[in-house]
Image 1: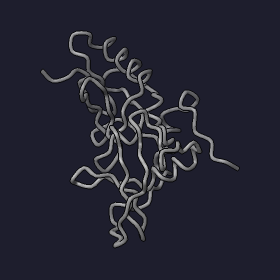
Image 2: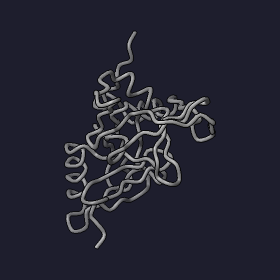
Image 3: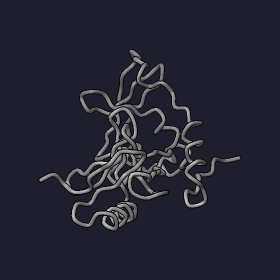
Image 4: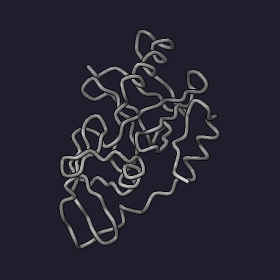
Length: 183
């Protein structure tokens, strides 16, 4: 049976937390294969994946490739297996936060994001929300972020403005994030 992405609107945050806990990613950070090359792949700024110029349209393939993605300290992106380390071009962020689920208010709020890879991420101390160049991003893992899709950006901005119109910020899992660019 093919994998079906979760619908965040139908899940409680407890359900989402359980899904996050069960997603096991391969330990790509610990793999240092000798065989290094070019994947001939690119992730566009809209989150679409391309191989040799053609779009990768199967969600299962994007999900599989995204689980092998790593970003090194020098900022380069790689697809890594125990046997190979292949470079990949990332135009902006490797992920897009496509859906938002919010529960609670103020410091008691929890925010969960579904990514275009179908991974789920809670905004918290380790997964900060930040403004870069007028766009919002949430940290995913290993120096990699997800850019918030426009509808998610507006949804988050509306939540923040409703709570604090003078200095828009949002809480999630005990951490507060400013949604305005630093002056």
